[in-house]
Length: 114
Length: 112
Image (cartoon, rainbow over all chains, first blue to last red; front, side):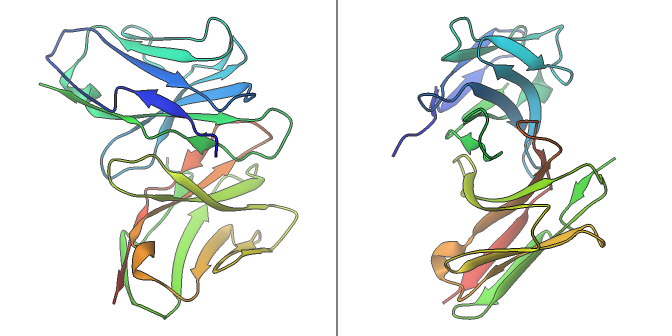
């Protein structure tokens, strides 16, 4: 069964360092999402891509966060510099364009900022 | 402003009984609703969904009910099994392909 792949699964970094997360969506899924989940809360959207284009990044803290999907397949989310409040689970999801709204999630990257 | 709310942070049920998880929403533009199950240190796993044109959708032990007038949906699990113990999130979207808005989750514990 096809799955969304994410790496690394866990990342520990110090405040002010740069971190990057990678996501490979299910093959053929044109829409890709990055969500952030703080412990005890539901996931919240950071950025949405349709192929290589950003559709919605209104909730992305652009002073420190950036996201790209250069070839419309895999995607990278970067934080520079990391802050203590960035500690969370970062989830990637994908969806087949034109079909039902079901988004399929990867296993996530657990970020801890010290 | 929480547009999707799960007012019960936890629920404990005996194995074999019915589990009912509830979710309320405020945005009348939401037209697609989903339930996800999440284990610790894993991503959410899709369980079941329902479009606003329906009021019920069933898949095996899982049934989702939608009451549009009350802006309320519920997930029924019958019979509940210990392996169902997890955090359950309801989510909603307004328009095809748009972002999902999640509730805060309900932790279900099914006791043997």
